Length: 101
Image 1 (cartoon, rainbow, N blue to C red):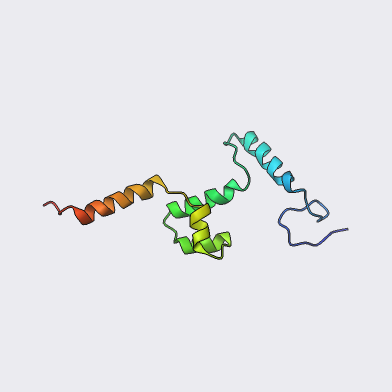
Image 2: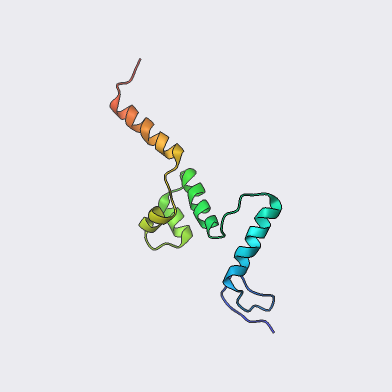
């Protein structure tokens, strides 16, 4: 008999899956396909970082993650990216140094 729930991962009968089941499966899968192992929750961080790297507005990223406040996204999921740091340096350089002809 199927058990209805609002869970994303369930057993074959719809009952809740043990919380570590998907994590264990994910690590085995990554090993099988030869990718570096990250924990399943790490996909959330990777998603946020990749979106920010593509210049997606932080408010959009925050909403996709389900955060009530943008500061949560900034504090916990988005680490400074080298390309953004470089862009910030160029922006300041363009503002502070006279234009060369």
